[in-house]
Image (cartoon, rainbow, N blue to C red; front, side):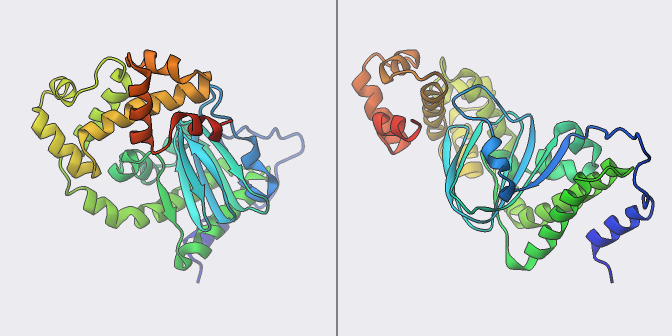
Length: 300
């Protein structure tokens, strides 16, 4: 009996059992699927420039080690971990030798053309939206199924068959359904928190106004709620206080300027409104868990 992946793939192949006719031009599809062994991670943009992801990227590390940066946050690479990156994020991978796994990239347009089941997980799942880098641990029970889907993607991506785009959209839809099941329990838990939309709006305002607004009361006024209500909602939705998120917004901007612009601690401190460099140095160490000079060494 065929499983869902085999049924989709083989039933579609019955419609396209002939390769494209001579002279057929391979249509440019906003989708890519590769093995990490082919070195695709080494072609990713560096956080030291202004390059940002132009689409979604799914990276599954089957085995290997190393580290990578996503929007100025450092993550360790571990076995059987799957990372979901979104459009607009900056990232740079530093894998060690011998890494094995897969990478799937697709544009925002390709995602929406793949159907509502595909878009719901990435654009509507509140837990996925709230995380800087959603990470899934691939359990042994679903590892074979997911690998079969991704291998089918790689095979289809390398062909010139007709209806290629349709098959890739179907495979992507199945992959996202697997991911949504993995997140289903966490989603239900997260929905019990206070208004998650308020938390999302709060984070958006921090990104836009961190240079001029640095207190909970200022953001509460913009969101038309009391500071107490905002603090409680943010704490329930994220596990951290509203003040913590504001402080991390300041640290994020400091890291961004250090990485992208190469600015000194003095330049960053004055830009962020700190008149005392020693005060900024202490603030950075307390909030980032590392002093500024050591942080600069990690990105050198």
